Picture 1 (tube, rainbow, N blue to C red):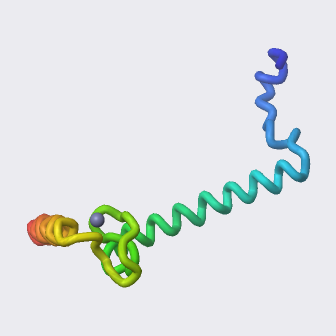
Picture 2 (cartoon, rainbow, N blue to C red):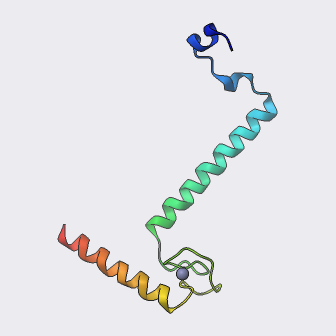
Picture 3 (cartoon, protein in one colour):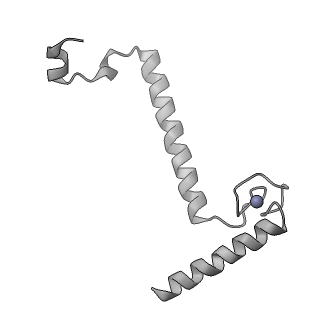
Length: 88
Ligand SMILES: [Zn+2]
């Protein structure tokens, strides 16, 4: 790369082939979808069957906690959270 290239600040995406562009768009879509999913999960962290509400690990298909420890831990944290929100 020459000095002139740097100075003009060429957008390197212009040099990608259509195939590369498609791959790039696919990756961006995937990233956006993952982000949406994570934001949704953050808003609704409870009662997702098959996913532990405490540690987000997979658990039994209809369970929302993998074991009693996770249930207690999560409910304890929810209690703390509720108290923090009540204080505001
Ligand atoms: Zn768990």
